[in-house]
Length: 329
Image (cartoon, rainbow, N blue to C red; front, top):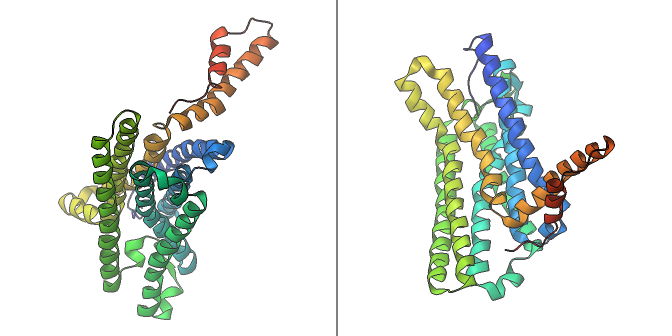
């Protein structure tokens, strides 16, 4: 999140807020298309893999919305303590949800490839929802700890005035530093080890398998590797304060530009990776997206042509028919 205060002139402030808002709306619209596709197709709602995937997308949409709103508020107004803490609670909770959700998705792929006979019984939709509830519970408790420390260490007078709603400004005690470092090390150590263990097991299965099983294992191995890439991007949002400190110390005159650029690359743009990594690569999901959006576009064009009494385009009509073919996985 951007901690820039009113150090920019009006044009720079407007440009940065416009870029943040435009990127946020664009990414949320793209993610929203995947959410719409998920709820439109019943087949996805009965597969725990897609349940975990769409939870990651919705979580990213919430985190991106709150991040952009807080970034804009740093230029416009100061919030009182209560609404600021509520927004920070949502932001920190969703931020911690992402790596835990990635770990859950990696374990599901590991069971599907390495324990295929037990996958139907272990990885059910009900257990996927239970895992999502557990993820939210753990992340919420970790985020709530920051507020509890603040209430225990600050005098009551500190909560009556306005505050610049940015985590490093609000959570600025030495206890917050220790708690943040401990949680980050434990959280990412757990997720990193989970990804490594599942990847090595899937890799071993891929080498021992043959035929179609080998292709399935190879796809799962690539998916877990992409989990690792996204985990790295999740880590960027945690190390951004340290990165900003180093860059601002080196180039103090470019402070606001450094903070804004870091905000875009660590908080905004990574939210676009979930649909690109998982949705577009998935044949079934991409086929349903084409069915829901491209075929509608072709149908609307065909209706307009019919109204003008022109012959319909055979290519458009033919492509619409192809969408109803069964997807080969």
